[in-house]
Length: 318
Image 1 (cartoon, helix red, strand yellow):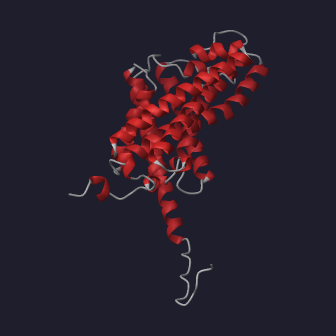
Image 2 (image 1 turned 30 degrees about the horizontal axis):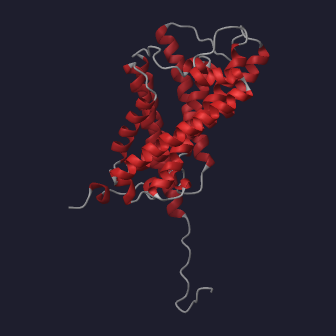
Image 3 (image 1 turned 90 degrees about the horizontal axis):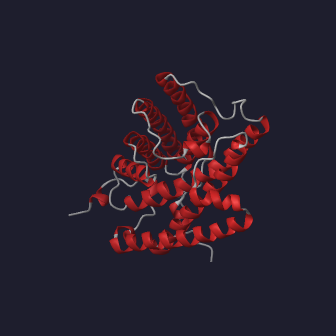
């Protein structure tokens, strides 16, 4: 009987997936090799940070929220920098391990076609608008007054400008690293066992929520919805661009307009269940946008001219 993964249509992003990804021994080998590389790389990073600055080493060691104070936003910058480095090291380790174990180029886990920056922009604009709307709705539901870090005059203007400027590239790097690991490698490995987009997106959402190790059930569901959305976008649009842009917009909106990022990133804060109403709405609207984009991508591909076949007597160049 043919395998279900062989009967279902293949999403473009899963085209490079081969037989090795379906063999448990290679999946186990990938996991342990990735852990070993990540541990070694992170240890080396810790040594380097310790040499550069004891402050960087302290941030690296505990990743706790930056203490309150007039200099808080200045200190948020090295926190985001260390986080971006750690996530990049971890993602790079597991992508490298996947390349070695599954015997294909690292790039095949990140892109199967030329990247489309318009999709990244679409993801950024869509999630940025939706998250800002959600933050406003949540403030109305809870009755709490918003105090956006970049607009709060309680912190010096120079620190707010530096924080805002640094957050943009550093959180982009962090988002791209998370997408390379969660939607790049993990999604392709799970795609070896099923090609049903709904199933793969749901599984990826559960994994994405689990790796954040947040004990709060509502926060787990909220991250699961984000993971579902990013996986859906990757599979429907054939690349990571929309997911990276959307992930970046989500984190940047929280960092700029909700609370300092070292605090926003902490698990176990008690996510109010009523916020899930906004999260579900955000997911549904974003999926609708993705479907519109997917139709445009398909229409563009169908309209692209097909190269003419060479004449029968044509000889290939030698």
